[in-house]
Image (cartoon, rainbow, N blue to C red; front, side):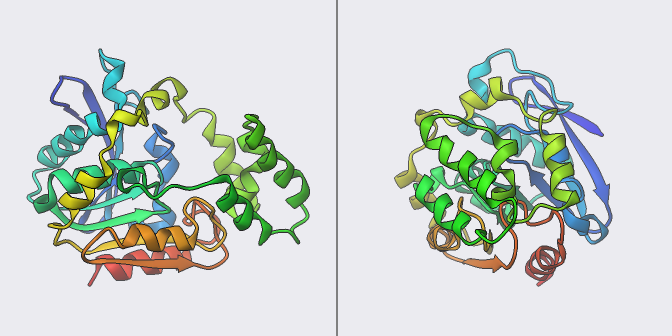
Length: 277
């Protein structure tokens, strides 16, 4: 564990694990502790992972101004992270909501990105929306699973404002083994709803300007989608990929929103192949 100061003086923490070339890692959630990434399915055996605890999460300090939880305000935290590591350019990996932060960073600092990996990314930054219907279609692929009726009912309840993640989690993961259940059990201690409520304020995004800025991004970008994920679905992942001049995407079979959990071999192979070119 190591620390550095954000531009506003907030003390931020990152966790280093593994060996090999550095890979900066941003968690999703939004605003979930970076511990949720673990070793990214064994990727730490091939890369040195530098997992950033975003401000107010994990071992990082809470900021004096909660408005700075807003995703666009945290772009300078990522830049300070790069500077603290002494890197001219970075390989950057982000998951889910963390991908919006990574995309905004790439738009503001395109010259600092060597390679960018977006794992089952959120995409408000480039205005690719996900809908309940996307999730419903994805869930329907799992209708033969014994846990499906209860999980599907919980997903349907979200349309009425009832959010029970643990109940519909099997649909999010696309499978429901020991590893998935343990990952969900850890979730309660890793989330920060008070910070998350600021992250996605509408003022954080200007998709037209972001897309225009990304046009100058020379770095290769890999978008990783799961076959059973509804946010993004494989089709939405293709739309996200189109925002990048050198974008490509891969759809991993048999997994959902957390493709490094459970059976991570396809995830590991896809990410390693991309980073090692």
